[in-house]
Image (cartoon, rainbow, N blue to C red; front, side, top):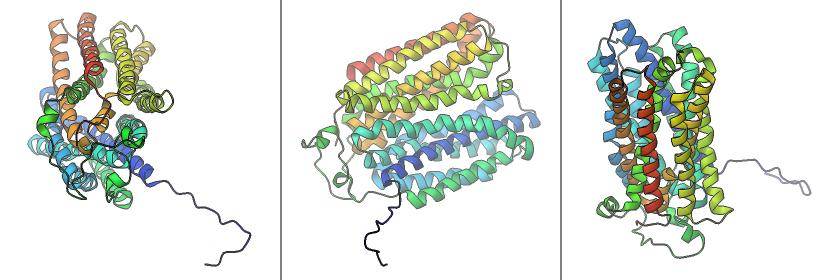
Length: 439
């Protein structure tokens, strides 16, 4: 190609590879949560057509989480051993395929349950694999933003699905959503095959800790390219820094799943309005949670880069602000006396919870960058189980207080959520660390 002297060559803009990875990971969580909401919408209609009762519906809808819970730790281990890229390919290929072939007859509950368990197992690889990829690609001072953006795809995906998919269902039928979900999964898989890649040797590309960024020697002993060191299971499971992350993931998801699953009942019984009648307002809490998750990530990196906080102090500050705010907002929800106030305090609760993710949900990449997927797998297992426990316990509390129409039941259920959040915050402040602990 001939270059004309004196005429500057125009530079073609190109997104840096690590930003391509972050964007692809964001779209991965976005797509996965569209699938979850899409199935819930589809099966609600299928169950109504089949005349299923609420207990059967609950069993089918919960089947996903049993599969999701059992594959978190194996998914993190496999991502560490074989690479996050290949595990994401396996995850999306499997759940997309199962979604396509999930039975559309609501009466065939056994087959649908088996399909949902399989989707849960496949999606259980997702978060640990993403965190393994991010720990390899993203330097320490960008990790809070990267993790927050990636995980916020969950909330934007939920909001988008709640807004768009009911219309798709109305025009093309509820079963069509299963095909839409599978198609979106395969579309993401094609994107990942184009942009996803492994780093040849991550320690020669980015530092794993702030010490290495500042020119101090790291703790790594290096086992050679493609030969990861054995996972230090005993040390990790006996580390209070790891348990601080696990406990906070449990508390975050306890509150989040209680709000998410009981929100229609809250609006119906406390505010005397159907959530489905609120139009775009019903998506507002999830949109704000999406935004505040990213604000929490930016705040964490700002504390480190601009305020020169140690990494541990920055994570604790963000986590504390989020957990205290969410605890206050949780206690305001039962006292809401209008639809707008109810939407506002629900939005405040989820927004504060989203902000807290800039603290605890990044910390595993600080203390165990080589084993980020494994630690995230352990942590996310606790988070998944907390949802099952929290939703059930809330139902017991409401029944004990005389039903969902009794405000005291909501106060007690939300007080339990608030106490769990504040207790987890105290544990995190006492035991969380910011330096690398595991090699």
